[in-house]
Length: 130
Image 1: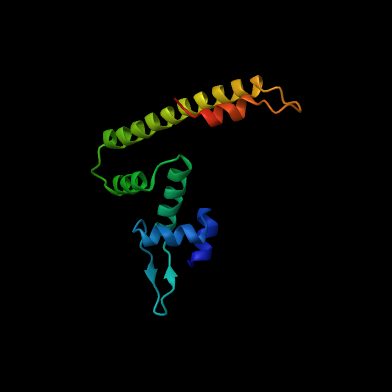
Image 2: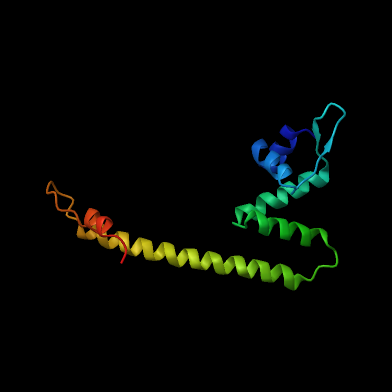
């Protein structure tokens, strides 16, 4: 398969596929004229990576997950630990986003939104975080 075929089938942009090759996540064969020749195994890895990235795993997490996937002697506990660590990071981000939402919601409700220059939103931004 060429890069266009594998991009269509994996759902990844060609630029992302080239990047994954540059950082060593995939290593497609090259034809005599230098074109990439992707195998079914490459397509499977790209689909795997696309799904892992959809779930928010970092590139390094993806590298580790792919290595574990390819290692038939892996322990599922190692995979679970990596996923649990990622889940903890997601929970932390969600808590931060909820706090941001509460603060911004309070500021929006405090602002009259009229023609007067007084604005609690701008005042809060100018005062900064203490």
